[in-house]
Length: 437
Ligand SMILES: *[C@@H]1O[C@H](CO)[C@@H](O)[C@H](O)[C@H]1NC(C)=O
Ligand SMILES: *[C@@H]1O[C@H](CO)[C@@H](O)[C@H](O)[C@H]1NC(C)=O
Ligand SMILES: *[C@@H]1O[C@H](CO)[C@@H](O)[C@H](O)[C@H]1NC(C)=O
Ligand SMILES: *[C@@H]1O[C@H](CO)[C@@H](O)[C@H](O)[C@H]1NC(C)=O
Ligand SMILES: *[C@@H]1O[C@H](CO)[C@@H](O)[C@H](O)[C@H]1NC(C)=O
Ligand SMILES: *[C@@H]1O[C@H](CO)[C@@H](O)[C@H](O)[C@H]1NC(C)=O
Ligand SMILES: *[C@@H]1O[C@H](CO)[C@@H](O)[C@H](O)[C@H]1NC(C)=O
Ligand SMILES: *[C@@H]1O[C@H](CO)[C@@H](O)[C@H](O)[C@H]1NC(C)=O
Image (cartoon, rainbow, N blue to C red; front, side, top):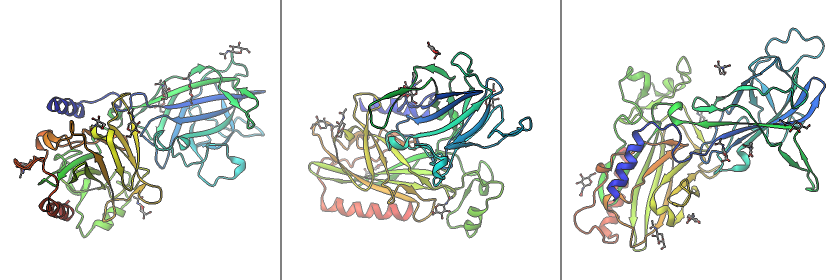
Protein backbone atom coordinates (compact mmCIF):
# COMPACT_ATOMS: atom_id res chain seq x y z
CA UNK A 1 0.00 0.00 0.00
CA UNK A 2 2.79 2.41 0.92
CA UNK A 3 4.74 1.40 -2.13
CA UNK A 4 1.74 2.12 -4.25
CA UNK A 5 1.55 5.53 -2.62
CA UNK A 6 5.19 6.25 -3.39
CA UNK A 7 4.93 5.13 -6.98
CA UNK A 8 1.96 7.43 -7.31
CA UNK A 9 3.72 10.39 -5.80
CA UNK A 10 6.98 9.89 -7.65
CA UNK A 11 5.19 9.85 -10.99
CA UNK A 12 3.63 13.15 -9.99
CA UNK A 13 7.04 14.72 -9.55
CA UNK A 14 8.17 13.97 -13.05
CA UNK A 15 4.95 14.75 -14.88
CA UNK A 16 4.52 18.27 -16.16
CA UNK A 17 1.44 19.58 -14.52
CA UNK A 18 -0.68 22.21 -16.16
CA UNK A 19 -1.82 23.47 -12.78
CA UNK A 20 -0.55 23.31 -9.25
CA UNK A 21 -1.68 19.98 -7.81
CA UNK A 22 -1.85 21.19 -4.21
CA UNK A 23 -3.60 24.44 -5.00
CA UNK A 24 -5.85 23.90 -8.01
CA UNK A 25 -8.21 26.75 -7.10
CA UNK A 26 -5.61 29.29 -6.12
CA UNK A 27 -5.60 32.34 -8.34
CA UNK A 28 -5.02 36.06 -8.44
CA UNK A 29 -8.23 38.00 -9.03
CA UNK A 30 -8.21 41.53 -10.42
CA UNK A 31 -11.45 43.45 -9.85
CA UNK A 32 -12.41 46.80 -11.38
CA UNK A 33 -15.14 48.78 -9.62
CA UNK A 34 -16.41 51.88 -11.39
CA UNK A 35 -17.14 54.35 -8.58
CA UNK A 36 -18.36 57.30 -10.64
CA UNK A 37 -18.87 58.50 -14.21
CA UNK A 38 -16.94 61.53 -15.42
CA UNK A 39 -17.77 63.76 -18.41
CA UNK A 40 -15.38 61.75 -20.61
CA UNK A 41 -14.96 58.48 -18.75
CA UNK A 42 -14.99 57.04 -15.27
CA UNK A 43 -13.20 56.68 -11.96
CA UNK A 44 -12.35 53.09 -11.02
CA UNK A 45 -10.73 51.31 -8.10
CA UNK A 46 -8.77 48.23 -9.10
CA UNK A 47 -8.25 45.57 -6.42
CA UNK A 48 -5.78 42.71 -6.77
CA UNK A 49 -6.44 39.74 -4.48
CA UNK A 50 -3.89 36.97 -4.10
CA UNK A 51 -6.11 33.99 -3.32
CA UNK A 52 -3.23 31.56 -3.71
CA UNK A 53 -2.82 29.69 -0.46
CA UNK A 54 0.96 29.59 -0.36
CA UNK A 55 2.41 31.43 -3.33
CA UNK A 56 3.33 35.00 -2.50
CA UNK A 57 4.71 37.79 -4.64
CA UNK A 58 7.95 39.07 -3.21
CA UNK A 59 9.95 42.19 -3.98
CA UNK A 60 10.20 43.81 -6.57
CA UNK A 61 6.50 43.10 -6.69
CA UNK A 62 3.64 42.80 -9.17
CA UNK A 63 3.34 44.65 -12.44
CA UNK A 64 0.02 44.61 -14.28
CA UNK A 65 -0.54 45.31 -17.95
CA UNK A 66 -3.57 45.43 -20.23
CA UNK A 67 -4.61 46.76 -23.65
CA UNK A 68 -7.32 49.42 -23.91
CA UNK A 69 -10.25 48.52 -26.14
CA UNK A 70 -10.69 52.08 -27.50
CA UNK A 71 -8.49 55.19 -27.29
CA UNK A 72 -8.66 55.51 -23.51
CA UNK A 73 -6.09 57.48 -21.50
CA UNK A 74 -5.38 57.54 -17.76
CA UNK A 75 -5.87 61.11 -16.48
CA UNK A 76 -4.44 60.36 -13.08
CA UNK A 77 -3.74 57.61 -10.58
CA UNK A 78 -3.68 57.21 -6.80
CA UNK A 79 -1.92 54.33 -5.03
CA UNK A 80 -0.15 53.14 -8.18
CA UNK A 81 1.52 54.47 -11.31
CA UNK A 82 2.05 53.67 -14.96
CA UNK A 83 5.69 52.83 -15.67
CA UNK A 84 5.67 54.88 -18.91
CA UNK A 85 3.67 57.94 -19.84
CA UNK A 86 3.76 57.30 -23.55
CA UNK A 87 3.01 59.88 -26.25
CA UNK A 88 0.62 62.51 -24.87
CA UNK A 89 1.62 65.17 -27.41
CA UNK A 90 -1.95 65.50 -28.74
CA UNK A 91 -3.16 66.90 -25.40
CA UNK A 92 -3.20 70.64 -24.77
CA UNK A 93 -3.53 71.97 -21.25
CA UNK A 94 -3.98 69.04 -18.89
CA UNK A 95 -1.59 66.23 -19.67
CA UNK A 96 -2.73 62.67 -18.90
CA UNK A 97 -0.76 60.40 -16.55
CA UNK A 98 -0.50 57.80 -19.31
CA UNK A 99 -1.45 57.70 -22.99
CA UNK A 100 -0.18 54.25 -23.87
CA UNK A 101 -2.47 51.78 -25.56
CA UNK A 102 -1.00 49.04 -23.34
CA UNK A 103 -0.13 50.64 -19.98
CA UNK A 104 1.87 48.82 -17.31
CA UNK A 105 0.96 49.61 -13.72
CA UNK A 106 3.12 49.10 -10.63
CA UNK A 107 2.50 49.71 -6.94
CA UNK A 108 3.91 52.73 -5.10
CA UNK A 109 6.51 52.26 -2.40
CA UNK A 110 5.82 52.28 1.34
CA UNK A 111 6.17 55.83 2.64
CA UNK A 112 4.24 57.41 -0.25
CA UNK A 113 2.62 60.73 0.84
CA UNK A 114 -0.87 60.19 2.27
CA UNK A 115 -2.55 62.24 -0.46
CA UNK A 116 -1.29 59.72 -3.06
CA UNK A 117 -2.45 56.65 -1.13
CA UNK A 118 -5.64 54.63 -1.02
CA UNK A 119 -6.26 51.74 1.34
CA UNK A 120 -4.31 48.56 0.55
CA UNK A 121 -1.87 50.41 -1.70
CA UNK A 122 1.78 51.21 -1.49
CA UNK A 123 3.44 47.99 -0.42
CA UNK A 124 6.05 48.05 -3.16
CA UNK A 125 4.05 45.40 -5.03
CA UNK A 126 4.54 42.74 -2.37
CA UNK A 127 1.55 40.44 -1.84
CA UNK A 128 1.45 37.81 0.92
CA UNK A 129 0.04 34.39 0.26
CA UNK A 130 -3.52 33.91 1.46
CA UNK A 131 -2.63 31.28 4.08
CA UNK A 132 0.26 33.29 5.48
CA UNK A 133 -1.38 36.71 5.83
CA UNK A 134 -4.72 37.37 4.08
CA UNK A 135 -4.76 41.03 5.17
CA UNK A 136 -1.59 41.69 3.16
CA UNK A 137 -2.65 39.52 0.22
CA UNK A 138 -4.54 42.51 -1.24
CA UNK A 139 -3.39 45.48 -3.32
CA UNK A 140 -5.38 48.38 -4.79
CA UNK A 141 -5.03 51.49 -6.92
CA UNK A 142 -7.40 54.09 -8.31
CA UNK A 143 -7.42 55.51 -11.80
CA UNK A 144 -9.51 58.02 -13.68
CA UNK A 145 -9.95 57.02 -17.28
CA UNK A 146 -10.71 59.47 -20.08
CA UNK A 147 -11.97 59.02 -23.65
CA UNK A 148 -13.86 56.00 -22.37
CA UNK A 149 -17.54 55.21 -22.31
CA UNK A 150 -19.64 56.98 -19.70
CA UNK A 151 -22.44 54.45 -19.22
CA UNK A 152 -22.43 50.75 -18.59
CA UNK A 153 -23.48 50.28 -22.23
CA UNK A 154 -20.63 52.28 -23.80
CA UNK A 155 -17.70 51.28 -21.59
CA UNK A 156 -15.49 48.72 -23.29
CA UNK A 157 -13.62 46.29 -21.03
CA UNK A 158 -9.82 46.38 -21.29
CA UNK A 159 -8.30 43.34 -22.99
CA UNK A 160 -5.24 41.13 -22.68
CA UNK A 161 -4.58 41.46 -18.94
CA UNK A 162 -1.04 40.32 -18.14
CA UNK A 163 0.81 39.95 -14.84
CA UNK A 164 4.17 40.95 -16.32
CA UNK A 165 5.72 40.47 -12.91
CA UNK A 166 6.10 38.11 -11.19
CA UNK A 167 5.45 36.29 -14.49
CA UNK A 168 6.14 34.18 -16.43
CA UNK A 169 3.88 31.48 -15.12
CA UNK A 170 0.69 33.54 -14.72
CA UNK A 171 -2.00 33.53 -17.38
CA UNK A 172 -4.95 35.89 -17.11
CA UNK A 173 -8.37 35.20 -18.54
CA UNK A 174 -10.66 37.77 -20.18
CA UNK A 175 -12.45 40.44 -18.12
CA UNK A 176 -16.01 39.44 -17.22
CA UNK A 177 -18.81 41.70 -16.02
CA UNK A 178 -19.97 40.52 -12.60
CA UNK A 179 -22.50 41.63 -9.99
CA UNK A 180 -21.55 45.14 -8.79
CA UNK A 181 -19.48 45.07 -5.59
CA UNK A 182 -21.22 46.35 -2.48
CA UNK A 183 -19.37 48.58 -0.03
CA UNK A 184 -20.26 49.02 3.63
CA UNK A 185 -19.83 52.53 5.02
CA UNK A 186 -17.52 52.99 8.02
CA UNK A 187 -20.35 52.99 10.56
CA UNK A 188 -21.85 49.88 8.90
CA UNK A 189 -25.24 51.59 8.58
CA UNK A 190 -25.36 52.07 4.82
CA UNK A 191 -24.39 49.95 1.81
CA UNK A 192 -23.32 51.54 -1.46
CA UNK A 193 -22.44 49.77 -4.67
CA UNK A 194 -20.18 50.09 -7.68
CA UNK A 195 -21.78 51.40 -10.88
CA UNK A 196 -20.24 48.53 -12.76
CA UNK A 197 -17.77 45.77 -11.85
CA UNK A 198 -15.63 43.40 -13.86
CA UNK A 199 -13.25 40.64 -12.77
CA UNK A 200 -10.18 39.06 -14.30
CA UNK A 201 -8.75 35.79 -12.99
CA UNK A 202 -5.08 34.91 -13.36
CA UNK A 203 -3.82 31.41 -12.65
CA UNK A 204 -0.31 30.13 -12.10
CA UNK A 205 1.35 27.14 -13.69
CA UNK A 206 4.72 25.89 -12.55
CA UNK A 207 5.10 24.27 -15.93
CA UNK A 208 4.83 27.63 -17.71
CA UNK A 209 6.97 29.39 -15.16
CA UNK A 210 10.13 27.37 -15.50
CA UNK A 211 10.97 23.99 -16.83
CA UNK A 212 13.68 23.25 -14.27
CA UNK A 213 12.96 22.76 -10.55
CA UNK A 214 14.39 25.19 -8.00
CA UNK A 215 14.45 23.02 -4.93
CA UNK A 216 15.38 19.53 -3.77
CA UNK A 217 15.10 17.36 -0.67
CA UNK A 218 17.71 15.38 1.26
CA UNK A 219 16.98 12.92 4.07
CA UNK A 220 18.64 11.39 7.10
CA UNK A 221 17.73 9.62 10.33
CA UNK A 222 19.23 8.74 13.67
CA UNK A 223 18.94 5.01 12.98
CA UNK A 224 21.09 4.95 9.86
CA UNK A 225 24.14 7.09 9.27
CA UNK A 226 23.56 7.36 5.52
CA UNK A 227 22.57 10.83 4.43
CA UNK A 228 20.44 10.49 1.32
CA UNK A 229 21.41 13.48 -0.80
CA UNK A 230 19.33 15.42 -3.25
CA UNK A 231 19.20 13.53 -6.55
CA UNK A 232 22.12 14.47 -8.80
CA UNK A 233 21.16 17.12 -11.35
CA UNK A 234 17.83 17.84 -9.59
CA UNK A 235 17.89 21.42 -10.84
CA UNK A 236 20.63 21.25 -13.46
CA UNK A 237 23.96 19.61 -14.04
CA UNK A 238 27.37 21.06 -13.43
CA UNK A 239 29.31 21.67 -16.57
CA UNK A 240 26.41 21.91 -19.00
CA UNK A 241 27.49 25.45 -19.65
CA UNK A 242 31.03 26.33 -18.78
CA UNK A 243 31.12 25.63 -15.08
CA UNK A 244 32.25 29.07 -14.01
CA UNK A 245 29.20 30.44 -15.78
CA UNK A 246 26.47 28.72 -13.83
CA UNK A 247 27.96 27.96 -10.43
CA UNK A 248 30.75 28.96 -8.09
CA UNK A 249 32.80 26.97 -5.57
CA UNK A 250 32.28 28.20 -1.99
CA UNK A 251 36.02 28.23 -1.31
CA UNK A 252 36.86 30.01 -4.55
CA UNK A 253 39.20 32.95 -3.96
CA UNK A 254 37.16 34.91 -6.53
CA UNK A 255 33.85 34.29 -4.75
CA UNK A 256 33.28 37.85 -3.60
CA UNK A 257 34.07 39.37 -6.99
CA UNK A 258 31.98 36.83 -8.93
CA UNK A 259 29.00 37.33 -6.61
CA UNK A 260 29.12 41.10 -6.75
CA UNK A 261 29.81 41.16 -10.49
CA UNK A 262 26.49 42.62 -11.56
CA UNK A 263 27.47 42.69 -15.19
CA UNK A 264 25.72 40.83 -17.97
CA UNK A 265 24.71 37.99 -15.65
CA UNK A 266 23.26 40.16 -12.92
CA UNK A 267 19.73 38.87 -13.36
CA UNK A 268 20.60 35.20 -13.45
CA UNK A 269 20.97 33.32 -10.22
CA UNK A 270 24.41 32.23 -9.14
CA UNK A 271 24.39 28.99 -7.15
CA UNK A 272 27.06 27.18 -5.23
CA UNK A 273 28.46 24.21 -7.19
CA UNK A 274 26.74 21.11 -5.82
CA UNK A 275 25.72 17.80 -7.32
CA UNK A 276 22.07 18.92 -7.29
CA UNK A 277 22.66 22.53 -8.47
CA UNK A 278 19.49 23.72 -6.72
CA UNK A 279 19.24 27.18 -5.19
CA UNK A 280 17.24 25.68 -2.30
CA UNK A 281 17.71 22.43 -0.39
CA UNK A 282 15.31 21.17 2.27
CA UNK A 283 16.73 18.59 4.66
CA UNK A 284 14.42 16.32 6.72
CA UNK A 285 16.22 14.60 9.60
CA UNK A 286 14.49 12.11 11.88
CA UNK A 287 16.13 13.15 15.08
CA UNK A 288 14.65 11.27 18.01
CA UNK A 289 12.26 8.49 18.84
CA UNK A 290 10.39 8.76 22.13
CA UNK A 291 7.80 6.38 23.54
CA UNK A 292 4.83 8.53 22.58
CA UNK A 293 6.39 11.01 20.20
CA UNK A 294 9.02 11.37 17.52
CA UNK A 295 10.97 14.42 16.50
CA UNK A 296 12.09 15.78 13.12
CA UNK A 297 14.48 18.56 12.28
CA UNK A 298 13.87 20.53 9.08
CA UNK A 299 16.62 22.72 7.61
CA UNK A 300 16.22 24.95 4.56
CA UNK A 301 19.51 25.99 2.97
CA UNK A 302 19.96 28.72 0.37
CA UNK A 303 22.64 27.97 -2.22
CA UNK A 304 21.96 31.06 -4.30
CA UNK A 305 24.51 33.83 -3.83
CA UNK A 306 22.26 36.37 -5.52
CA UNK A 307 18.96 35.87 -3.73
CA UNK A 308 17.57 36.63 -0.28
CA UNK A 309 14.15 35.00 0.11
CA UNK A 310 11.85 37.24 2.12
CA UNK A 311 8.63 35.71 3.52
CA UNK A 312 9.67 32.28 2.31
CA UNK A 313 7.34 29.36 3.00
CA UNK A 314 7.35 25.58 2.94
CA UNK A 315 4.46 23.24 2.29
CA UNK A 316 5.08 19.72 3.53
CA UNK A 317 2.90 16.68 3.14
CA UNK A 318 3.23 13.90 5.70
CA UNK A 319 0.45 11.75 7.19
CA UNK A 320 1.47 12.58 10.76
CA UNK A 321 0.74 16.31 10.38
CA UNK A 322 -2.71 15.31 11.54
CA UNK A 323 -1.15 14.87 14.97
CA UNK A 324 1.56 17.51 15.02
CA UNK A 325 2.07 18.36 18.69
CA UNK A 326 4.66 21.07 18.72
CA UNK A 327 6.68 23.09 16.25
CA UNK A 328 9.61 25.26 17.18
CA UNK A 329 10.73 28.57 15.64
CA UNK A 330 8.47 28.55 12.54
CA UNK A 331 4.85 29.59 12.06
CA UNK A 332 2.50 26.78 11.16
CA UNK A 333 -0.87 26.34 9.56
CA UNK A 334 -2.68 23.17 8.62
CA UNK A 335 -3.96 23.24 5.05
CA UNK A 336 -6.33 20.72 3.55
CA UNK A 337 -5.86 20.83 -0.22
CA UNK A 338 -7.95 17.73 -0.75
CA UNK A 339 -10.76 18.81 1.53
CA UNK A 340 -10.68 16.20 4.25
CA UNK A 341 -7.18 14.73 4.38
CA UNK A 342 -5.33 16.62 7.08
CA UNK A 343 -1.78 15.72 6.12
CA UNK A 344 -0.37 18.98 4.76
CA UNK A 345 1.16 21.88 6.62
CA UNK A 346 2.44 25.26 5.64
CA UNK A 347 5.47 26.49 7.57
CA UNK A 348 6.98 29.94 7.40
CA UNK A 349 9.40 32.15 9.29
CA UNK A 350 8.72 34.31 12.31
CA UNK A 351 8.83 38.04 11.56
CA UNK A 352 12.19 39.67 12.26
CA UNK A 353 13.60 36.32 13.42
CA UNK A 354 13.83 33.91 10.50
CA UNK A 355 11.35 35.12 7.86
CA UNK A 356 14.34 36.22 5.77
CA UNK A 357 16.35 33.39 4.22
CA UNK A 358 19.73 34.98 3.59
CA UNK A 359 21.76 34.46 0.41
CA UNK A 360 24.20 31.50 0.28
CA UNK A 361 26.89 31.57 2.93
CA UNK A 362 27.33 30.70 6.57
CA UNK A 363 23.99 32.19 7.65
CA UNK A 364 22.01 31.19 4.56
CA UNK A 365 19.76 28.70 6.32
CA UNK A 366 16.75 28.44 8.61
CA UNK A 367 15.70 25.49 10.76
CA UNK A 368 12.96 24.15 12.93
CA UNK A 369 12.05 21.04 14.91
CA UNK A 370 8.71 19.27 14.77
CA UNK A 371 7.27 16.97 17.40
CA UNK A 372 4.69 14.43 16.24
CA UNK A 373 2.46 12.26 18.41
CA UNK A 374 2.63 8.59 17.50
CA UNK A 375 -0.37 6.52 16.76
CA UNK A 376 0.33 2.81 17.34
CA UNK A 377 -1.69 1.72 14.34
CA UNK A 378 0.00 3.97 11.77
CA UNK A 379 3.41 5.00 13.10
CA UNK A 380 6.44 3.17 11.72
CA UNK A 381 10.00 3.87 10.68
CA UNK A 382 9.65 1.23 7.99
CA UNK A 383 9.18 1.76 4.29
CA UNK A 384 10.00 5.44 4.48
CA UNK A 385 6.74 6.31 6.28
CA UNK A 386 8.57 8.80 8.50
CA UNK A 387 9.75 10.82 5.50
CA UNK A 388 7.65 13.46 3.79
CA UNK A 389 5.57 12.65 0.72
CA UNK A 390 6.13 16.02 -0.94
CA UNK A 391 7.70 19.36 -0.15
CA UNK A 392 7.14 22.71 -1.82
CA UNK A 393 9.30 25.80 -1.35
CA UNK A 394 7.50 29.07 -2.14
CA UNK A 395 4.95 26.98 -3.98
CA UNK A 396 7.47 25.15 -6.18
CA UNK A 397 7.63 21.39 -6.08
CA UNK A 398 10.94 20.11 -4.63
CA UNK A 399 12.69 17.11 -6.20
CA UNK A 400 12.68 14.14 -3.78
CA UNK A 401 15.16 11.25 -3.64
CA UNK A 402 13.68 8.04 -5.09
CA UNK A 403 11.88 6.00 -2.38
CA UNK A 404 14.25 3.04 -2.74
CA UNK A 405 17.16 5.25 -1.64
CA UNK A 406 15.54 6.22 1.69
CA UNK A 407 17.57 5.34 4.79
CA UNK A 408 16.83 1.78 5.85
CA UNK A 409 16.15 0.57 9.31
CA UNK A 410 18.80 -1.67 10.77
CA UNK A 411 17.51 -5.24 10.76
CA UNK A 412 17.19 -5.55 14.52
CA UNK A 413 15.80 -3.28 17.17
CA UNK A 414 13.79 -1.36 14.66
CA UNK A 415 10.98 -0.60 17.07
CA UNK A 416 13.08 -0.05 20.18
CA UNK A 417 12.80 3.32 21.80
CA UNK A 418 15.76 5.64 21.77
CA UNK A 419 18.77 4.22 23.58
CA UNK A 420 21.87 5.94 24.82
CA UNK A 421 23.76 4.58 21.84
CA UNK A 422 21.23 5.99 19.41
CA UNK A 423 21.42 9.32 21.18
CA UNK A 424 25.16 9.36 20.65
CA UNK A 425 24.65 8.38 17.03
CA UNK A 426 22.32 11.33 16.59
CA UNK A 427 24.92 13.81 17.69
CA UNK A 428 27.49 12.07 15.52
CA UNK A 429 25.28 12.09 12.43
CA UNK A 430 24.37 15.70 13.09
CA UNK A 431 28.03 16.58 13.38
CA UNK A 432 28.96 14.74 10.20
CA UNK A 433 26.01 16.31 8.44
CA UNK A 434 26.91 19.84 9.41
CA UNK A 435 30.53 19.33 8.57
CA UNK A 436 29.86 18.08 5.04
CA UNK A 437 26.42 19.22 3.96
C1 LIG B 1 -10.36 32.20 -7.82
O1 LIG B 1 -10.17 31.96 -6.43
C2 LIG B 1 -11.31 32.26 -5.64
C3 LIG B 1 -10.93 32.08 -4.19
O2 LIG B 1 -10.32 30.87 -3.95
C4 LIG B 1 -12.46 31.31 -6.05
O3 LIG B 1 -13.61 31.63 -5.30
C5 LIG B 1 -12.75 31.50 -7.53
O4 LIG B 1 -13.71 30.57 -7.94
C6 LIG B 1 -11.47 31.29 -8.35
N1 LIG B 1 -11.75 31.61 -9.75
C7 LIG B 1 -11.43 30.77 -10.74
C8 LIG B 1 -11.80 31.21 -12.10
O5 LIG B 1 -10.86 29.72 -10.56
C1 LIG C 1 -14.69 39.07 -8.37
O1 LIG C 1 -13.50 39.23 -7.58
C2 LIG C 1 -13.72 39.42 -6.20
C3 LIG C 1 -12.37 39.53 -5.54
O2 LIG C 1 -11.57 40.46 -6.14
C4 LIG C 1 -14.45 38.24 -5.61
O3 LIG C 1 -14.73 38.48 -4.25
C5 LIG C 1 -15.75 38.03 -6.37
O4 LIG C 1 -16.35 36.86 -5.87
C6 LIG C 1 -15.48 37.88 -7.86
N1 LIG C 1 -16.74 37.75 -8.54
C7 LIG C 1 -16.96 36.78 -9.41
C8 LIG C 1 -18.35 36.71 -9.96
O5 LIG C 1 -16.09 35.99 -9.75
C1 LIG D 1 -26.55 48.89 -16.79
O1 LIG D 1 -27.40 49.74 -16.02
C2 LIG D 1 -28.77 49.41 -16.08
C3 LIG D 1 -29.52 50.43 -15.23
O2 LIG D 1 -28.94 51.67 -15.32
C4 LIG D 1 -28.98 48.00 -15.56
O3 LIG D 1 -30.35 47.64 -15.68
C5 LIG D 1 -28.13 47.04 -16.34
O4 LIG D 1 -28.23 45.73 -15.76
C6 LIG D 1 -26.69 47.47 -16.29
N1 LIG D 1 -25.90 46.60 -17.14
C7 LIG D 1 -24.72 46.12 -16.74
C8 LIG D 1 -24.01 45.28 -17.76
O5 LIG D 1 -24.22 46.36 -15.65
C1 LIG E 1 -0.90 40.91 -24.91
O1 LIG E 1 0.10 41.41 -24.03
C2 LIG E 1 1.38 40.84 -24.21
C3 LIG E 1 2.32 41.39 -23.14
O2 LIG E 1 2.18 42.74 -22.97
C4 LIG E 1 1.87 41.13 -25.62
O3 LIG E 1 3.12 40.50 -25.81
C5 LIG E 1 0.86 40.60 -26.62
O4 LIG E 1 1.26 40.95 -27.93
C6 LIG E 1 -0.52 41.18 -26.36
N1 LIG E 1 -1.50 40.60 -27.24
C7 LIG E 1 -2.43 41.32 -27.83
C8 LIG E 1 -3.38 40.57 -28.71
O5 LIG E 1 -2.53 42.53 -27.69
C1 LIG F 1 20.72 40.10 1.18
O1 LIG F 1 20.55 40.80 2.39
C2 LIG F 1 21.75 41.30 2.97
C3 LIG F 1 21.42 41.92 4.29
O2 LIG F 1 20.30 42.74 4.22
C4 LIG F 1 22.42 42.29 2.00
O3 LIG F 1 23.63 42.72 2.54
C5 LIG F 1 22.66 41.59 0.68
O4 LIG F 1 23.18 42.50 -0.26
C6 LIG F 1 21.37 40.99 0.13
N1 LIG F 1 21.67 40.23 -1.05
C7 LIG F 1 20.96 40.31 -2.17
C8 LIG F 1 21.40 39.43 -3.29
O5 LIG F 1 20.00 41.05 -2.29
C1 LIG G 1 -3.75 10.85 14.88
O1 LIG G 1 -4.36 10.60 16.13
C2 LIG G 1 -5.64 9.99 16.05
C3 LIG G 1 -6.17 9.88 17.48
O2 LIG G 1 -5.21 9.30 18.31
C4 LIG G 1 -5.53 8.64 15.35
O3 LIG G 1 -6.80 8.06 15.20
C5 LIG G 1 -4.90 8.83 13.98
O4 LIG G 1 -4.70 7.58 13.35
C6 LIG G 1 -3.57 9.56 14.09
N1 LIG G 1 -3.03 9.81 12.75
C7 LIG G 1 -1.80 9.48 12.39
C8 LIG G 1 -1.43 9.73 10.96
O5 LIG G 1 -0.97 9.01 13.16
C1 LIG H 1 -6.13 19.24 11.13
O1 LIG H 1 -5.20 19.24 12.19
C2 LIG H 1 -5.17 20.43 12.93
C3 LIG H 1 -4.04 20.34 13.93
O2 LIG H 1 -4.04 19.13 14.57
C4 LIG H 1 -6.53 20.63 13.59
O3 LIG H 1 -6.51 21.84 14.32
C5 LIG H 1 -7.58 20.69 12.51
O4 LIG H 1 -8.86 20.78 13.09
C6 LIG H 1 -7.52 19.45 11.64
N1 LIG H 1 -8.41 19.60 10.52
C7 LIG H 1 -9.13 18.63 9.98
C8 LIG H 1 -9.90 18.95 8.77
O5 LIG H 1 -9.16 17.51 10.50
C1 LIG I 1 21.11 2.65 5.67
O1 LIG I 1 20.30 2.94 4.52
C2 LIG I 1 20.96 2.67 3.28
C3 LIG I 1 20.01 3.09 2.18
O2 LIG I 1 19.89 4.46 2.13
C4 LIG I 1 21.33 1.19 3.18
O3 LIG I 1 22.04 0.99 1.98
C5 LIG I 1 22.17 0.81 4.38
O4 LIG I 1 22.40 -0.58 4.38
C6 LIG I 1 21.48 1.18 5.69
N1 LIG I 1 22.36 0.92 6.82
C7 LIG I 1 22.04 0.07 7.79
C8 LIG I 1 23.04 -0.04 8.90
O5 LIG I 1 21.00 -0.53 7.79
